[in-house]
Image (cartoon, rainbow, N blue to C red; front, side, top):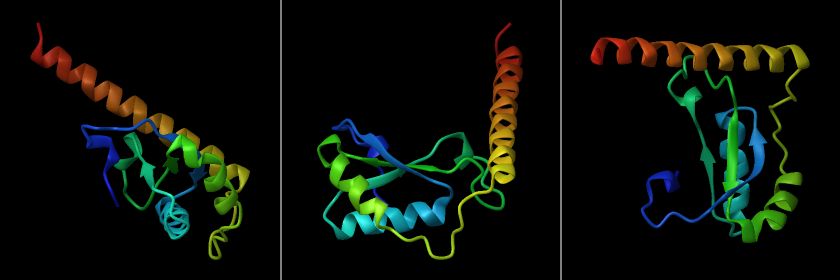
Length: 117
């Protein structure tokens, strides 16, 4: 996976799709690259809390010039062993994501209080 986030000549990328987990994101990126579209996954807080898999999913990022073609390609991608998330699972993921963000925020506040008077 290419790390576009740390590139000093960073281009502006847009979200082409949302993958429910890292495996689906990998399949989507592979399909895009097979069609000559540069793509990468965009993570966030969830990458810190990856115990047992993704809880918040992955954003699939592409160059804005390739957005239409990327969405056409992704519309044809079959995630064979991946069934769509059930509403309960989606709600659970949202709650876990919010808890993870709140925990991170609490730790940062705690550290700030300890480090600064």
